[in-house]
Image 1 (cartoon, rainbow, N blue to C red):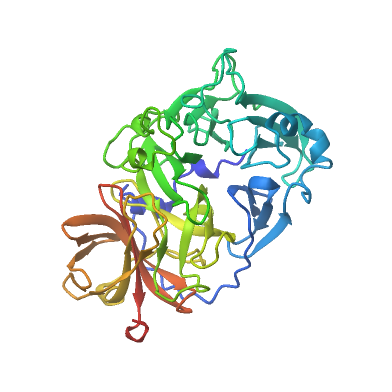
Image 2 (cartoon, rainbow, N blue to C red; image 1 turned 180 degrees about the horizontal axis):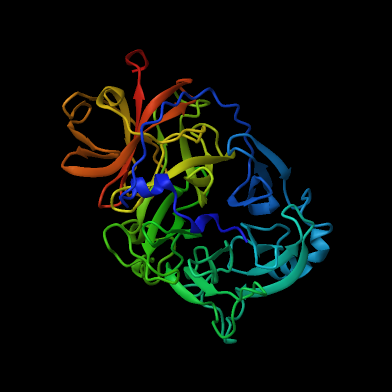
Length: 475
């Protein structure tokens, strides 16, 4: 069993205010040799010296450094995980009336074997299956153990399925809690997001739970892709979900809530109970009812008004997983992203994940390039920036950056005015009377082809703010 997420990192302690400090690090980044892959809905696991991402349609890739990826399995017909997938998983394909698989999750259990949780769904209905297969090695081949949960026809009590209150049994994430108990969180649209307590030995749900405990969602609200991360420094379980539609015009955006218990209740940064995040009764895809709930990590954005073919922002980034690397002392957020001007084309992206002084996750604005956070002085911080406010909307609009100047003494001038102040590594940027609690980090910017300073922060209302420092000539 991989227990890396159960450890507390030096950097995480510093950023979440547990008393530790890190000294300034003189770090010069070189231009990374990124090698990108397309894996939709990537779920991360670390094994045998590599990070693996398993996704929908049996997309499967690995990397040693989270920058240069190698594709292992492209899709269901061309997969490397099953020797004869259509024969072995025939029950799922027949029941769900489909020829593909959706988001998957792999975990290593106490017997040392790897368990792949797969799901099949037709797509336009919650006619779905959730099953598990096992292998001796992370790369397979996997042997099916069977389907253990279905939705769409009758519920677990034998009654007619009610898609307004009961889950579509897809998008599993299987994880250990801080007491080494196994759980599975799952669900997409339909009746909401649910969690089941699992048996540590068999990897199957414990008996007499039905669909489990509902955490949020309902009435066909567009909430999916649940993923759980425990931070031992804050002692919170963080539930990541994605709102909106997954295509380029769907307004996909990542959100987070937290709880002291894996089965909730979960609240957002405004202390709203996430069980109330659901569509109005009788509604279908009622985005207005759910968009006030959940701290929003990232939506559509672009730093430079350069049109198509310049990837300096994301469209419909989401269906994330998250990971703590004990050796590096870093948290990471993995997700698939589309790009302005690229229609439905998508790639895997990895960003560092931090926790602000209030214990809420905040995302580094630029993709991971080996950077390590440090303390920075005022001269490193001041300069010309472009800031993006992600808002709380579920929208296909691409949020464009605004140009500002961070001055000595803490003033912000330009397209908006405000204040910035830094105490240790903790930074507060105040705009229009709203404070964003975050930090600065020096990152590699592909668009500028140079190392530059970046800011990330979140307000008490759960709105994220990104900033990137630009040379004056790049304004």
